[in-house]
Length: 109
Length: 115
Image (cartoon, rainbow over all chains, first blue to last red; front, side, top):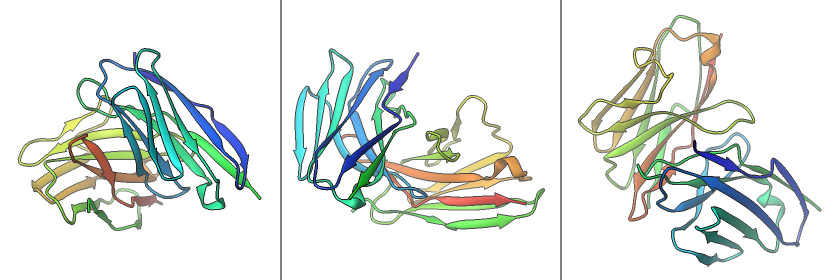
């Protein structure tokens, strides 16, 4: 079967760094996406990884290890507005995104 | 670029009535759009894949006669919830697939409440 495993909830302090881990199992693999979803809103695209390694984009970086079925999203210099759910979504062989429940990130002052 | 709009943003309807939700790609053509439903604190659930000019592909367990999808043009897909019931109350979100990586861009969502 296909499944995603992420922590349900994480708490971090404003200005700090947090790493959100994701392990996945899919039928085939065509890359992995990270999305941010604020409460009551639709997801917004953050990053895409298809090759192993780290992709950096401003305060956000995403890492992928295909052999381990593992990815993480690294958020630096946390701001209060980063409080949201973060969704790890691998793409399977049919180019369908597989969605988990995401990680709710709570930022405290 | 890659802006997706959705209308209405929220709707309240009475049980037994039908509701139509529109999803538009504003600055690009989308041959493939997706319709999702999300209940509070749960993951996105794919309902169907909508391809321009052809019938939608529904996920297992989604009633195609209840959730009518039409993708008549490259910029518009519609979802009609027919004979709505309170259990259909949910957050409905569309997305369009675009770009070299097949990333999906989401509309702002429609919150449906059936009374």
